[in-house]
Amino acid sequence: MLFVRWLHVIAMAFFVGGQMFLAAAVVPVERSAPDRERLRAIARRFGYGTLVAIGVLIATGSALASHDDKWGDTTLQVKLGLVAFVAALVLWHMRRPELHALEGAIFVASLAIVWLGLTLAQ
Image 1: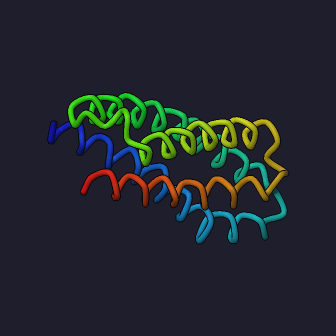
Image 2: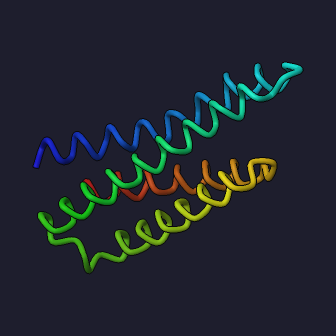
Image 3: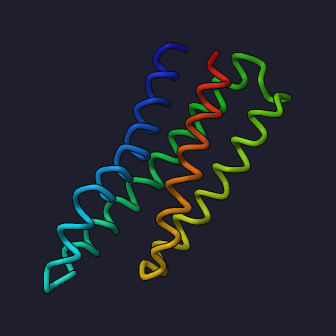
């Protein structure tokens, strides 16, 4: 199970760490550029990577929940609800990238998911 947990953490780090990197470095620099096509390409590529990361998180999270018999845990249920919410927000944002409020909602919900994951791991 150690490898499964490692994959879970790597996928989470890609997802949340990527959001932090985009928000802190890429977006501020690229928004000031006259041609925003590169920013759109970066965001689109990250969006696809995010969907893969969410898939890995669901697969590994399911394995961890089964192994630790956590399916009835309320904390896990809330976390799963937030995961579904974030997945929907990511898809929506990929279709409507001009809705910048979605970026903040995805990030805040992602941090809540990390918090709940750490709570479950204890």
